[in-house]
Length: 434
Ligand code: 5AD
Image (cartoon, rainbow, N blue to C red; front, side):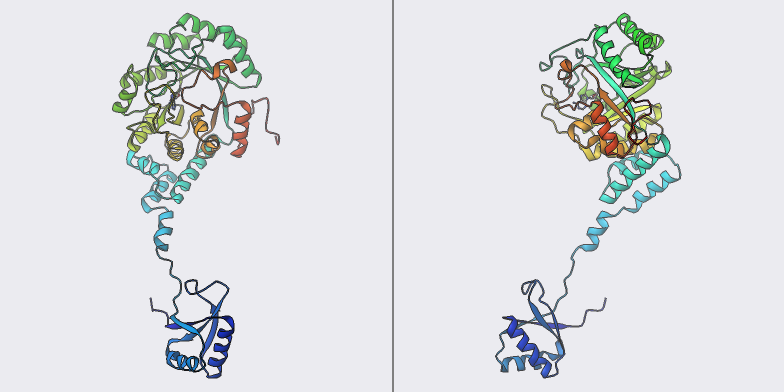
């Protein structure tokens, strides 16, 4: 670019000196212009005189003769050093845009491309990813948010998963088991809200034998006809089959991570391949399957999360719960680092874009680490909220992680409205504008 014509700025010691100087120069036919004094030479309110470089000598002569108190500087216009780089850093890079184009064309993404989505490099890329997932969500599952309710009916567990606040050997929780009647009382409350699906969750507790579970399932079906999701961990093929036979519809068994090393380091009692086998059995038995992972596990990489997403897709999982890892008191990971919320949201968004027609919960773990977590997830591709319908006296004993947020119907409604979405039609307390 052509360098700007050299000009000089005359900064006088006072306003009256400046006016005097300008009058003098004008009189001598020197071309002047009054401008705000540049910030590095004086206050924003003061005025200085701009002259052409060629008039320097003459001007200095006249001003000297009249003993004007002034200083002369080259006139420099303000440079915005680094502007282009800063703006480009906020923009979307070409390779990212190409992934968006692939999504527009309906093409499948590779693992590397999913990693690239998780690894956004600018605000614009992040916004684009979230917007793309929100659009996919809207086109595929619409604006209504599915609401389900969980009863955490026992916190006894025979396993010692390193991250879990109800692991065997953990002293903090007061152990409890709910009776069939207690569980049914909760089921009826949920049913009265109009909710269609109840999630029965517990630690891996052998007290609940097949017989007890079947009795429970059959009673729920008889008295409410609600859909039942079981979330009671690893069981045998035969047990899964019998529970399905008794009326269970869905099964929630999270993979937590597909990285074999990370899985092994967290689950002293489990084997990744066996967990996958259980999921395969559940599918074969006709359950609607739910899985999920945690984001921010020690040793977990972005590649691992991308691999998890591809696993959900390949397994044809119907519901995928993605939450940040949250350190739990009294566990080996009590002093670990909370999973990153923004990365968790990107994982939710990428999962919507890759797995498409699935239920994606705005997880309790997200709500627990960020008060706006559920609204953010609903805007990033999520379409499901799970209420916690465990009786009050047991809730604080089911702290899978510290400061677990208690999602009740009101907070769910707030999240749905906060995200500008619609409550399900079946809910007895409906959107006011419908
Ligand atoms: N942080 C986040 N999520 C956890 N879960 C259990 N412990 C933690 C924790 N410390 C999640 C797991 C589990 C689900 C019931 O709760 O994903 O499958």
